Amino acid sequence: MDIQIISRDGEPEYAVLPWAQYQALLKAAGVQPPTTPSSNPILATVAEDLQPLEQLRSLREAKGLAIETLARTVGISPSYLGLIERGERQPDAAIRRSLAWELGVPGWREEP
Image 1 (cartoon, rainbow, N blue to C red):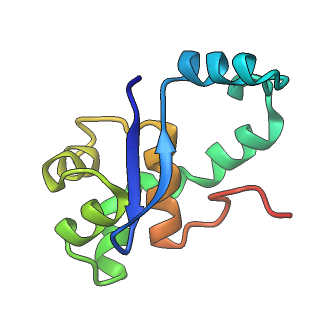
Image 2: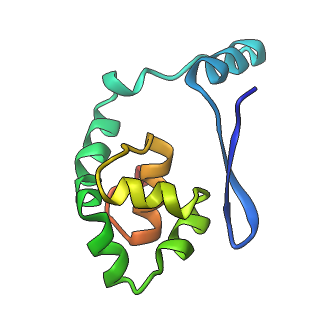
């Protein structure tokens, strides 16, 4: 299984795995799989709210965070975060949500 662990304050907080493996786990557990992200209007709204991540470097600097600090908090390398900031890489949804959470971008998750 290809799992990425995202930590906060040195403690594991999220486990990220490929969609197909997630679906297989749900099926094995007898759980109804959720709708795909493209068909979920709530997730589409969240994606729109995360647009400020296009100014990721400015947001990070405004918070006074070093690139190394933000990267380690999110669970990625500083060099990968640099690529994201320069627009050379597009992070997956889990990394975008983690960045949004750390930077205080609204819409990082569905409100109760």
